[in-house]
Length: 115
Image 1 (cartoon, rainbow, N blue to C red):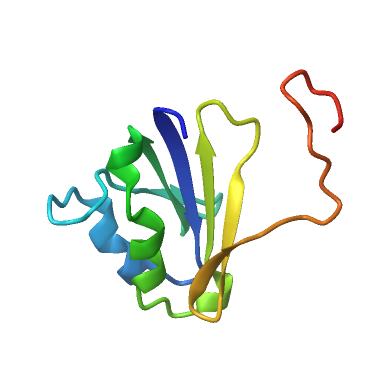
Image 2 (spheres, rainbow, N blue to C red):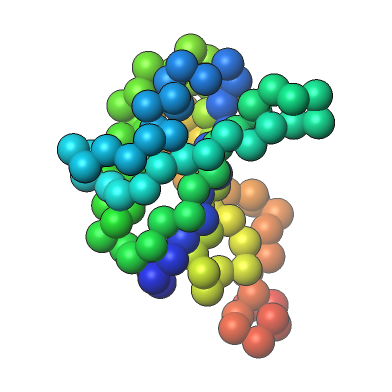
């Protein structure tokens, strides 16, 4: 992983669960906080964060996985390192965050050529 990462959390009706994560907390294993992302009608539909240094985000996925989501099946976490072209997506399955892989996705090498 590179220095900086962008994280987006999408989850239905999770305002109460995410509210504590909108503040800095030195007790967490990861460093940073999320800001709400509002839809065009003014309600929050997700939360975003920009995290620096790999150690600053250590434990983030485990922390998110441990939260009491009101609708766990709607939880998606998108993670993108500064050097990545696309987001790595995880989704909640049985209470655990699992990588979501598109079976039709095409892997490209550094030059944009298909592997």
